[in-house]
Length: 79
Image (cartoon, rainbow, N blue to C red; front, side):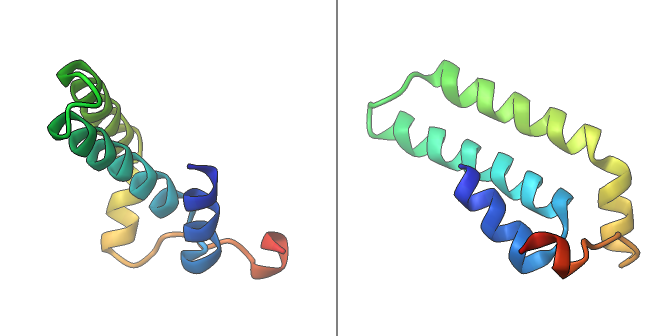
């Protein structure tokens, strides 16, 4: 999970994009595990609720991303 977040942070240089993508991947992975019988529906529901909470807490970032005014990290700080 940390590797996904850090890779997205390095490529997009936007922490909110990396966090939202990580939350979305958690939902997808838990859904796949549910369909393959490796996890319960409760895990999928929990991951979906966490993703909704993540979207709620990042709503101002989402507005800035849509308007293309989101702050990006300096590439020197990522190395």
